[in-house]
Image 1 (spheres, rainbow, N blue to C red):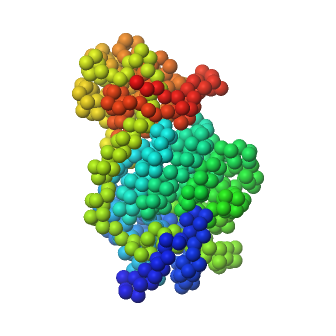
Image 2: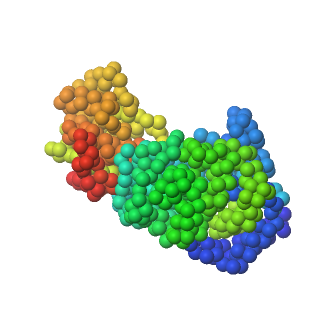
Image 3: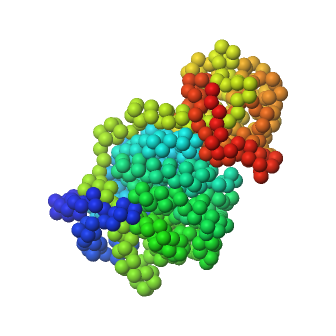
Length: 597
């Protein structure tokens, strides 16, 4: 980087402390400096600043051939460096499936390579690198980084301090790897047990409890120098459709929205949230036009900007999702999103089409350059506040000092223990004693492991039991056990003192019910552990001991075993109600239910 360029960036970063945070106004000096940067940009550079794109590869300049091929097929470039040169993108999002997140040093090197490529361009600016690191079932950066319990587990723990600590440590680790924007926390209130896309990604069903935990996480992440992102505005908690594959409609009245969905977003704004992500959902009471919220001026400008007083960055959810593509073509979506009040356009399916559509909309007069400048100013304020304009680079030493260090791993273990919830304990079967129940058979669902955990769940559970002095054997029976898998498990149970079953989203028709029924018929004590939704307990009423872990990441499974074995006391409380399976109008276990020893 030339000295003049470095000086310019340093001068621009001078007033970083005064930059807008959520609703806080930026200083006039700061904005004048940033407007100076904007005034020197070409129109093409301005358009690029609004996009956050995916790119395949572990390296900015030398990815594997398969990733070069994928980039050429989807984006028309070979590498991240070429993506930046062609589109001058303001942001890049990391994914595990795009091979961006193999291990911490590689991630840091990729981040540095992206920054070098961007700053080498004429009038080059640092890139805002983001990812979805919610923890629990959604995490793009895996071990050896620290993995925390997800939102519903933290909701069961009920501790704002723990939520803030998880955000602070998680944020510090992301920042050390060059990731400065995290698409977390989820601010959706999960009032619908059938929600296929949010579920355990939500802190719970109580709007005020969710609001408190959202605010705590915002302060944790942002205190560590990473932009938090509350999602998915105006609230994705009451849907039975997954917006990745369909177009959900939320039928809340405006009054219901204000009571159920709005409180966590209000809390996020009050906490100074840096960014808010839109939802590809229709809410007719808030905008009768039938558009997704991502493309709705009444929702994004009328409600979020004007009514909630939010002036931070608004980022779309992925523009590749079906919910935003149902009504309009991929060329219209980015233009309409900007007209609605969006600042960052995330992951368009066809980047060339989206980028050119915005360019043509300005040249044709549908969008003004001044409208683009407004969004770019918000994005640059955020980059400045995060220190990117001063120093966008990270070091290997910083990674070694921060990522997955013993103190962080220990904090995650302690927090996880405080989230495990004991739902049923008939006849005081738990805690399980090594003296009376030494030989344990571990069976059950082995869903694909959340990013970067060791898995599979039955093996993690058996290993954790063995470490505590039990003799445990793992036998995977899957999420839909076959008759032969069930017979095998029943035969193996004859030789065990107790059976531990991991259950996963059990429904009335699930053969997981048959498995549990046949294991109970052996007369062996059966302990069940819900490794995702706590609602499983309603489908298996005959089980005498039932725990909820809210996710099948190692940190939560191992904590559940410590609780099961009496090494930690169960203190978690249900953050959602569990309805009866035979009569959903009746609540079986209410919010706050949880047993202790």
